[in-house]
Image (cartoon, rainbow, N blue to C red):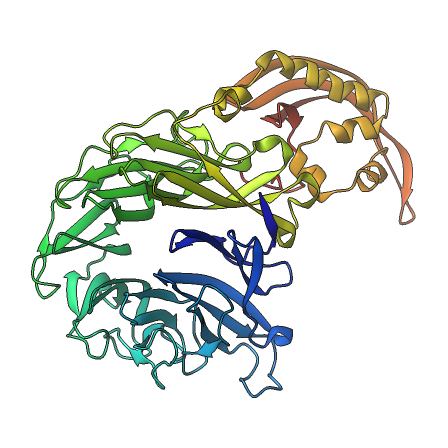
Length: 558
């Protein structure tokens, strides 16, 4: 179902509250809105200084009937409401404790340099928020605030939790995990010696914190994306270290840590790690997804999965997206488990050039995986991206933002789609084979493009240009730019399929530029034969000529 329009300041978030599905998004008016599927109504979450602020970042947390939404508000100019100066950035939280209207937003950040927040909490009324903050100017620090009364009130002053001196270090990528009264924060902090991973622990609901522990010592390597997992009384943190996924375990609540053997390693030269997603299911199995980015131009990313029954020893990595490795990108992975701990993964996929949402399913807790399948409505009607995935009992729900052909380059005009998916039921429409490339059409489409040039039928030429170019350039504009060259003949020398859906066509053509006057000077190019290599792509079920500008670039990196 289409929930409504959305901006793309952040992906829409699905969440269950007491078994009822809710959906938080930024509407086309840039208001923060929750859609309640039980009542099928929109509920306003937050405005802030709407006339003079840009809202971005969404974080949600639910516990029983209580739901909390946090976001960042950035002023465009000085506020006449006394909120601050232009470019000041603040964190706000709104709460709903009845399933109905949200409270007035509460500002929980001091200073003016806040970035989008992360929420966590428990069922006894503790709600936590952490965010990156640049109030110190030259450095980025981590600041924290807490409510102990279900979000009704927050500490008057937030607390800085990273360890370096202000203006001398950079702290980011915070990850927060709460279990009862215990709370853990992990982050990356970089200084003169490199980039290390740290963990801080609180056992009194964030009132006080133990000293930070350096889990991964600073080296010349770059550590990235640390994530916390708590299972069966043991705490784990996982992160990227250059070309490896590493981990550490703590059996004493985060006081001391033991390094795990590396979980995955990239051996190929030039290939790098990208993205990291780690979650434990209800049985304590740790599921880890990471991206590997190829070293070719464009650096396509593939998704890989590994699992561990104990959090320490992981299975060999399995590739989730099918097709030729690094031929196209799969990014922004999401993972969810049903009540039997079957696993569904969704991601944004570019194998058809247009971004669509694809997924893969494991019926046995990640031990084996099926062939990936299409989860959205398909690539022919536009672009679908920014997926979010949740599960409740034996049901999976997926949300994404869909753009039709006319609005694919107008990011504020996306429609938020929410749909229930059943990974156990595959249809012909969900199979990538439905969009299998027909190579026999290529030469006919090339001939049609050149016949339109010979006839000076620029409208027909336009219809054979790639859809990304046509989404950005009106037909009348394109036609007005043509007609300066006369074409007389062409011949195709050879066609070469570079990837599953991209080809190069080598040909010769004869043309001339008739005499014309430009700025008082006369120009002409006599009739001559030229050899040319053209790029063609298979998209929307047919072959199209890939437009390139004078710098040899196309509208979208393929």
